[in-house]
Image 1 (cartoon, rainbow, N blue to C red):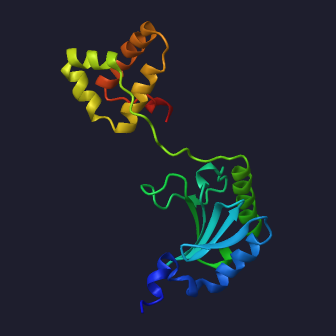
Image 2 (cartoon, rainbow, N blue to C red):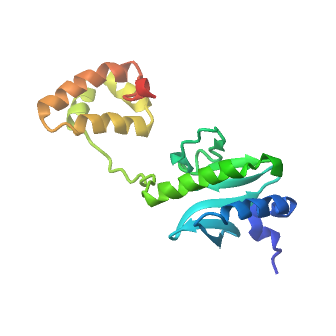
Image 3 (tube, rainbow, N blue to C red):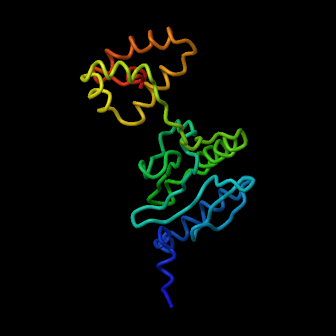
Length: 195
């Protein structure tokens, strides 16, 4: 017999927030979401898509938005709890029931449902590797360029390669390479200036 607590995982503190979580549930019940249980806790779905989940933790209880990355978050409530693990999940944490403003919570949930209806999701990053023969040729001629390029994260390397290779004509590709070579050498990512 294994103990129950092993299953509860992130809900192991649910009991200490019982009243608060029930209050959150009562708010969510006013929306069109359907409550299900996944991973041992309440998860609310819209047409089988996970929209929000609830959980109690040691120091707070939280509502999380599975695609929270798309919420406008005008009230600056959301945090990205696990930056590395998930790109889109956002948590809204509370440490007392008084912090739960029903109107605000409903506004966020309705926006999350609307986003779900519009099919906003982060497309899984199954990016094909891009090979730029032309850039490779440049790097073969210029070892500094090669070592500078290799210092970039794979994502930034990908942005450069995508930028070069989305050009249809070779001469455009070459002019794009001319543009990015100084950036690469200066260790400036393609989109750094917009970030």
